[in-house]
Image (cartoon, rainbow, N blue to C red; front, top):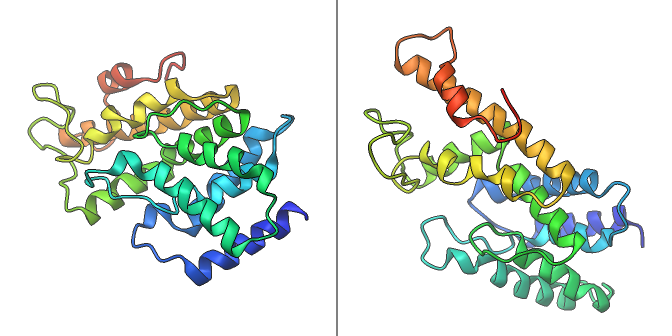
Length: 234
């Protein structure tokens, strides 16, 4: 069965069965992760059906950022995915279950599972790329709004004199996680894309810093230099 047909079936299933209030983990997110994964998988000998499936179901369970069991989300998602495949997609090849489940389990940043297969590395990179760049920027503040988290600490926006806490200030998430992602990427293509997208986030931070200082026309060069992605000068 062609990948496009499987994708159509998965999307139909989600429209019928999936309800989620988190705008960062909707069907459009799954579709974007798959599109990115396809780009990362070009010229690679990988199981594309396993990658497609993992991309669509990796967040079938996604506990809220402030949930005490958030680090278990990917394991719970993998178990639920296997049940869904066995129940609602009986013709899905069972010999691919293990590859799919590991890719889902290993995609999570908070789960801390090292990917052991090419498929898992690609899915992890594709999902992490979604957290960077313009979409990642929008997601940070969408989640902050949903959790009623202030955008930033007006007195110390870049945590120069305090401990970073992205549960207290949305902007802290840039330093506590997002700007660290390029160094965690598993593929060469993924790392290059992550550095480019991280550069965009740093430029946003520099623009914000300049505006907070009363200069709406410039970028704060000190912020640019301080937070520039490693191996990728601004």
